[in-house]
Length: 325
Image 1 (cartoon, rainbow, N blue to C red):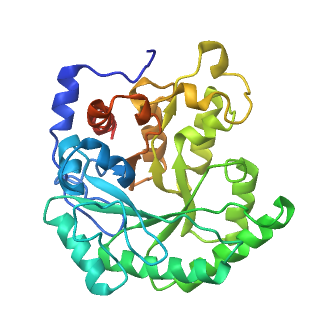
Image 2: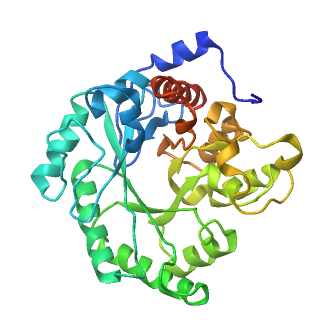
């Protein structure tokens, strides 16, 4: 398969053996001892992938693939269903529960880097805002810097949705004003993959705590030519609070043309080390903008691999990102 991101076996083994560095303030990671180099970005993975590794619990799975952090799905009742092998699964509904989960990760040299919410704001706005406020409170206790949120129309028409989304995002910011937690709207689907929509939404909210969970693959999935992606990443880099590192390997004649939304995604999605997106360039763009969050793997191609090989795929992706951070 074609790639400019491939790495040798020796490089892979060296990178995957790296240990996690010390933690800094909420949502950031410490600088080097000399203070002369920028912080090392922590490499994370979405929790839903970790069962594919074949280990007894989420922490063992993270260690097996070299991941240092995890993005954890949190449900409206504040349970984290994909953190398997940990209690029953863990809940962040109370201060004690949140602290216990953070301490359990820390005791293993690992970290919850973000929480993932699957929101339905225009169907149940009050409940969704209250849920987000509770998650933000838990984040403050756990020193988790970002919450990935969904801002997509489910009930409202598109011409009504921008105004609604701006207002509900303002509420999120206002009701969590006593925290340092930032909200990262993921670019996905037909709405938040639109550059113009995101620009208008961020302008309408007017808060430095409302930004982006940058899904590198989704802007490509949306039909943008490969060469245009880096300008989009650069445009939003100052607002990136969290990432989903994902790629696609399109045929050569389809990379730099405008494609239909989602064109042949199931056929061509792939691990980041086989895809078209240059992650060395992505990381450089984020660093230039002062990004201090994580590099979080979301691999929607894992189902193409035999079950016993999926952990190896994730480990190779982790190793690649550790080389670039």
